Every structure is written in C-alpha cells, then in structure tokens.
Length: 487
Image (cartoon, rainbow, N blue to C red; front, side):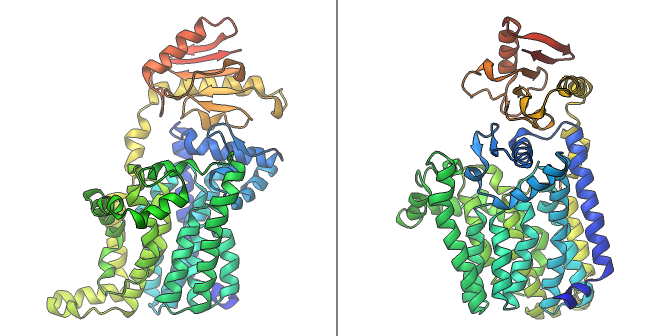
C-alpha cells in the first residue's frame, strides 16, 4: 500500500488540491450570497454544533435526532472539528476535500485495470469533471460526500482481494448514510458473481444487507419514535414501511414497471451516462449491475429531484459508472473503430493518450455543471442582501455576551437559517407547517420580498401582521423588506 501511495503522480496531487479549492470557494461564495438553505445545511450545522458541545444532536429544523435521520455515525467526526472551533465552514471544507479526494482512488482503479498513465490521469479528471461532483458541492451539505472516495477505494480493495481492509473502509462508507448499505450490498453481489472476487464479495454483501436490516429495523426507529425514516414517503405507493415497500417490488411489479420504463427514467439515464458515454463502447459494462439498485431507487421515487444532476442522489452511482468505463477502455473490444478509417485511427490514438477522455469530460462539465448559477439564480436576492446581513449581524452582536447554551430560539427563512444555526432551537418558515408556538422564539427574522423555500409571500406577510400586533415582540430591524422581531 505504501508503494502504491508513493506512486501517485505529483500532477494528480495538484489536481486534487486545486479542485478542492475550487469546490470550497464555490460553496463559500454561494453561502455568502445567502443562497444556502436550512434543508440541509442548517440541519447538519446545527447537529455538528451540538455534537461539538457534547449535547444531544437533535435538529429542530428537521425535528429529528441525527441518528434517526440517516444514521450517519461517521458524521460524528465532524463534531470533533466543531469542538475545536464551531464554524459552518468546516462543512464546506470537509465536503470539498471529500469530493476532490475521490480522484485518487479513481486513478488507482484505472491503473489497477491496466490503463496507461495518460489514461489513468484522464480518468481522475473524468471523475472531477463529472457534473454531479461539482453540482452536489453547491447544494448545501450531505454526509455521503464523505464516503465517495471510500466507496471508490472499496472497489479497488475488493478487486485487489483484500477483504479485511475492505471491511474497515465499508464501516466508514455505510456510516456516511444508511441508504449506502444498499449500494454496498449491490457492490458485494457484483464482486462475488460477476467479478469473481469471492471473499470481498461476501464481505460487502453481508455487511450491506446486515446494516440495511439493522439500521431500518432497529437504529432509525429507536431514534425516531419507533417510525421509519420519512423518506419512505417517496415510495408510499409501494407501502408504508421499508419492508412492505421492498416486498411489493416483487408482489406488485405493475407498480414498478411503469416508473422504470418511462420518459423520466430515460432522460435520467441519459443525464447520468452522458458524461462517460463514449467509454462504454468497449462493452465491458458489468459494473453497471452494482449501480442498478441506486438507479432504481431514484427512478421509482416520486421526488423528481432524485432524477437530476443537481442533488446528491446520483453520487453513489458514479463509482460504478466510472469502473464500467475503465473496464471498457482496458479490456473492451474497440474493433468497430476500424470501420471509421483514418478517423477511427485518430480516435484510437486520442483514446490511448487520454486526450479524448479529457475533451469529452470537459464538454460534459460545460453542458451539465451548474456554474452558471453564479450569474443567475444566485444573484436573485441581491436587493435584500445587505439588509439581511445587517439583521443577522444585529442578532449575533446582541448574543455575543450570552452563553451559547442560552441563545434564544429563532424562526426564519430557509436561506437565512444556515447563518443562525448555532443554537438548540432553529426552525424555518414553512407555509404548510402548524401555527408557530411563539414561546419558542426569541427572534423572528422575515424576508417579505423573498420568503424562501417552503414559504410564500402571503404566509410571510401573515406572520409579519401577526407579530406586529403581538405585544410580546418588538421590531428590532425593519428595512428593505427585512423585518426582525425580538421578544
């Protein structure tokens, strides 16, 4: 292992470092533009803050204990960073490093498969430029980003027949999000049945199935009032519990086939396959089998966000698409290029050097990565930016002399919540939520011009009217559509 580590080219280290900085800067700029949201950035900032203080990691934003949410026990490591210094920027740093670091095991997998140095480095950049890697970095924070490099490394360990090291890595990976146990189990089945890696396959399959059962039947219900995770609601047409939904996949196939064979699913497949599509031409696509369950979960969900390249749901699919591309490049049949004559010879040369991989990856990134948001939707609320900042600063200034565990509760909009989440009580304004219990909140911060995700102009204005007539509150700030009430 030490020899393998020393063999990593310096250019790859530079690539990972530069891309981590790019990702970090992008997420920080988005946050400073007040475009982060309570779901999910404030959730994880709040629980990490509470972990760092040794308190119960219960998020009032989601109204869930951290372990009853996704049972992401690996996230407790982030709590240690907050114990050193509590700052939301730890989340951005962890996310940027976690995502960028995946390029190293991606390169190692290419080298393991026999690709030449140029192709191996190009594969690392194909990973870095894959649109989901960039886009998920912009979408707040999600703990599975800490496991993507581990999942790629687990594939390398499985193919290297190192079951003990594989097991240790999988403990970390599955601790990044409970649903990753499905991907781990699928990886085990692929290693066992298609890649002919007996012990690594059995280890991954056993650990994935075992943790899936334990976490859904014991861990999450224990921290969630005996209930399954509310994400099961996305599959309510299949059943009201994880076990019922899983059973109905087989008992009621008519409910499933219509979703799988639909226009939405076809478009989704084109989106996730497109950035790597030419490299599947060699036909060695067995690794797709390990990605099938995650693709199926996204295709069957009633939530459309699971079928785009903006959110985190496609991230666990990427390692196996990358492996399929690597296998096709290394062992596939490319004889069909001969039929293209001199153009085929030129393409073969470009593929062999890695240049074709670079060019196609860059095209995919430019077409599907959401860097354009910085010139469009991320600037949509500049008219209230300065006043929002002033109201936030007023709260922080007044709380400076108050012990951290005595900071008052806050009700605010989705995009302002992540700037005020270091407290035990924080909720966002949601139009469909029950009426607020005003006794819980010392502060209510509203944006009447941009009420935020989950709210409406009508709802924000109704809260404003109610609080103006509530003698328990005074107006501490009122400018440019930003209103701060203090109890």
